[in-house]
Image 1 (cartoon, rainbow, N blue to C red):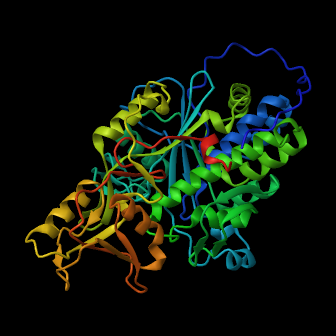
Image 2 (cartoon, helix red, strand yellow; image 1 turned 90 degrees about the vertical axis):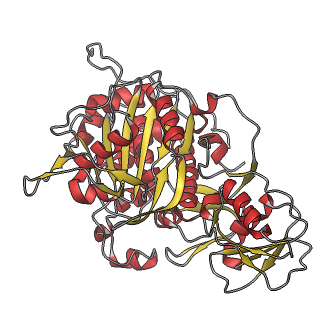
Image 3 (cartoon, one colour; image 1 turned 180 degrees about the horizontal axis):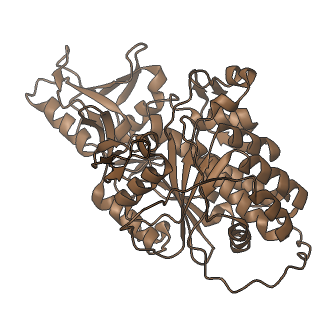
Length: 493
């Protein structure tokens, strides 16, 4: 939805002359690791709200908030860091924080269990040098990663680099190892670090008066308690937390959840920038207190950075933001002792991060003929192929074609009971209906057949009508070149 027109802001209070400053190369960062929140949006929320609002209020108001930010040193003793590019890169980290939420809220919003000491959500937010654009890149929590050699802060022992899931870097070495690992993987220099937890997220949404989201299909997740019918809804802080945490809505799992997080972030920015909150010093103070009361940031993110960021981002809007996810080359990449991970597509990820280093918009690339858009990433769809014809090797051919299109096939096609199948059939559990529709888009003319209890693996019974697999692409995930959308595109129409 378009941003509502704003009335002219009152003239800002007189400030003491400030010495000339070079464009900020860094941004906020905090530390508090935990797990299932999708602060992606909150972190960015934090960034947007704090940053945007500080443009319209006095130095004194912001200074009073600076003391409330917990500090951490994520850059301690770091050497051989990537060369600084243009613009500013903020690493936003989401943590659990459920231990600071009341028992009633934990029960109401399905936040039982013990908080973990790892990160569950991680994003790089790039603010362009001209402060006209923001690019948000999601880093899946299960990404296969290699830590650099580092010193254990507790024992003082030197630990060689080793494999792990990227979200485990925090549990092992805190913000410092997290930043080192991200920089090693992306070759993007992180300027600021911001860590946000459940509490901050819920309070921020509530102070803003709720955030509107839309969904074309019903969303239900028994793990988080999310239960939204199709349509537009104004979510409170707790409901928003359920929305961004949900990962069992369908077979899209974490990648689908990141899509919802990006949609929510765009909607939250829209709410903050169109409601007049950023032009009201008292409301701005309430929002920033809600945010900063439960975040940690690097020592370099202070009053001056708040003001500079605010001035730079004064005209920031959802349509000037881009959202994408690191391109995934292999789903279910098994690592001994670690389990299944997501392995990045190195070549495509390098191009993505080069764009950040060069301060170039992602959507500016020449467009190629686009595959059919679907809601679920093919790599998240498990498929068992059965040969429904009498032609020997036909099932193997179909399996290979689906795998080449990005589907997660078993690579072990079987023979169907009926070898006279004329039309290709897709059997699916009703709980994975969106995955089934995505698969059907790749197999035009196929028949969808609901089979309750079948589970997450879809079955393709290849019939004589099969000719080829049509290329499809998830709007929410990255198979091949990163799927880039703007904040304006993420909002309800």
